[in-house]
Every structure is written in structure tokens, then in C-alpha cells.
Length: 455
Ligand code: ARG
Image (cartoon, rainbow, N blue to C red; front, side, top):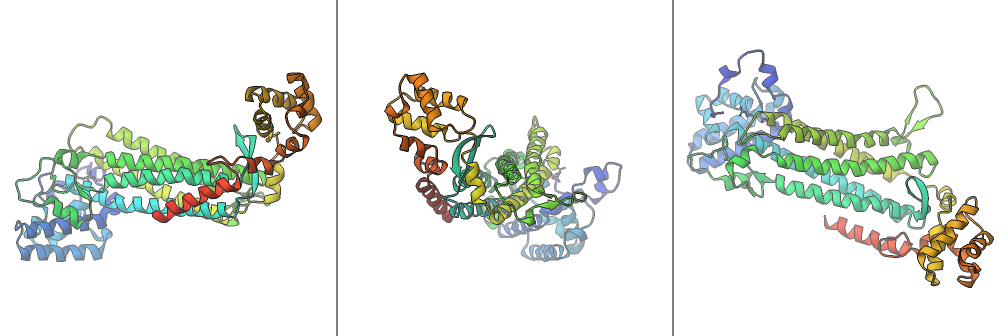
């Protein structure tokens, strides 16, 4: 790419459509106009292009911008098409726009410029989702629900504790996206094809005009690196994976009647009149697959590419657009589903003790009374085996006699054991940092709120 407008070179041939990225480049149309403007302003300031010519080029770019991407002449890509349009309007002097650059640094700059905006949208969506989770949690600090491991009832928890578990994960997703943003926000412009330019350009100036934090220091790296795409899509795929877990839980919970999703996030069946299905959340669950396939598409496209620019890179970019679009959209959908959902207290509370979910609390009480935890575990396990569901005091005592050769009540009072069997008490007792007890959850809520207000 020697920086010459060669309409003739893209005039025909069976591979013409195959080579062109013009349609997909609509995504970076506005970015390219911005990059062209910044470059021309810098060329004029450095006295590389005469002021009147620069003014004519800038005027032509205004027209190109207002006519839009669809009005562009044909071209191998948006960069060539915009240049052709400028030359058509300005005459041969329009070709001075491409002094001291190449499409290689130009496209890399455009992608980074546009992706910044998209990453900010994705980050905003994660923040809105976290706010929705915090708001919902605030209302459910006391709402006891079953907690699961291996999809089996494990220990009682609260809806707030559950919701904040995802808020905490999305906080890390946000941090990863912000990191990706920082490394995306560096300017490759002025790297030219890869080997720089003899013109006295000012790369810091174009970086500043385009709002980049700085310039990439090596021109060969600048024009060919796409690890910022990998990193961004990896952060998106990680976030989508977190999101898919929440979506899956909500599908399961709604199936059990533990959560009531708003009709806006459900869908009916075309044949079965009674059905209300959680389709939106199933689509969210699938979005993790889209994002992961985008990541794998990028990895396989970029793997083993030689330095410096290779046209393969043209096909890497759309993976990033697809991932960022689907993940941002899915994030917003989940925020809406969470905000509009309700948590039926009675159903949740009565299920919270299912499957002897308070067993750990009974063992903890025995351990607090001085029994080694492993022995306490044995006593309660023996009672669990004897009983169907939650054992009564007599069954627990019989197990103690068997394992310890002593009555359970030599260790703990009847009243205390009775209390440990109550799911609400079980939750209240687990007040360690990060735990489900209302006080511990309130501390988590406060921390999350402070963090969210800092963004
Ligand atoms: N459209 C190309 C891309 O997306 C940029 C063109 C660079 N072309 C070239 N022959 N060096 O990567």
C-alpha cells in the first residue's frame, strides 16, 4: 500500500468482491473521517500540506460525512473509498491527504477509535447491570432461599447474597473491560505501512486530536498488532460467561417458582397456550457461545501471522464487532430482567430448608461445643442417613449415641439444636465477612455501592 489512489487497481477481476471490506467497514466510517481530519490538520500544522489544500480536503470530508457511508464510491475498503470521494471533489490535490501514512496504520487507528466507544458502551451496560443487582439485593436482604452446590440443596442463603455474588463477578468483568480499554486507547497513526515515514510528522498531535492516551512506540508493532482485539474480546467472552451463569440460574429458578420474571422477558408458545417461557434468558445463555466463538475466531486468525501487516487482519476485525454487540445487548437484557423480577418470599423460605440444608449448621454447633469438626460431621451425617429430609432431635440424639457413645444434649441444648435447624437462623448465624447474614450482606452492599459511585 504505497499511498496512491489507484481506482484502476480495483476496477475488476473475479476476486473484487472477495477482497473488499467496504460493507463491513460501515462500522468505522465515522472513525475514518475523524482519523482523516486529524491527519490533515497535523499535516497542515507541520507544513507538509499547504493550508488552502488542507482546507479543501477538510471541506470535502465534511461532505463525505454528511452524505454517509452508503453514498461512497466503490473501493477495496472505506479508506480507499473516502479518499476517492475526496479526490473527486478536490482534484488531484485531494491525494495529499494520504501523505505520510498507509491504510495499515489508518485501519488500525480506526478500529481502536471505534472500539473505544463500543467498549465504553459495554462497560456502561455492566455498570447498569451491577446497579440493578444492588437495587434488587437491597430489597431482599432478609429473603431466605435455598443455596445449591452440584444443583443439590446445600445451605440456606438469601436472595441478596445470591444477587451480590454476581455483582462481585461483574465488578471484575468491568475491571477487565477497563483494562482492555486502556490498551486499546493508544494511537498507531503515523506508523505508515510499518516502517514509518521520512516526513516530519507529529504522532503525538494526531493522538491528542483523536483523544488517544498516547502513541504505540514501535511502528511495526503499531500497524500490525491486534492483541487489543484479543484482549477486548477475551474480556467480553469472560463477561458473557459470567452472564450465562446468571441467566441459567434464573431459568432454573423460574422453573422452580423461585423467581417470577416479568412478561417482558418471557415468551409464549405458538401451540401450547399455557406456556410462558424464559426465552430471553436462554438467548443470553447462548450469547456466551457467540462471544467465545468470536474469541476463537480471532485467535485462529491471528495465530502465526508473520510481521508486519497481512490482509488476514481484515477478517479479524468483524469478530470483535460481533462480540461487543451481542454481549452489550445481552447485558442490558439481563439488567432489565433482574430489575423487573420478583422473588416470592414464602416459596423461597419454605424451600430453604429442603434436603436437610441446615446440616452444616448442626455440625458447626457441635464443633463450637468442643467436638472436633470431623466427628461432628459424622454425627450429623449418620442422622441424615437415618432420616428422610431434616432429622428431628430424637434422630440426631440416636446418631450421637451411636457415634459418640453419649447424648447429643451433653454437648448442646435442645433449644440450640432446634434453632440450628431453622433456615432463617442458619443464615443469621453465618455472619463471617462476605457471608449471607443480613449484617454481612449489608456490608457487601455498602462496598458495592461505593465502588459503583466511583465509576
Ligand atoms: N481494509 C484493510 C483492513 O481492514 C486495510 C487495508 C490495507 N490493505 C493493504 N493492502 N495493505 O485491514
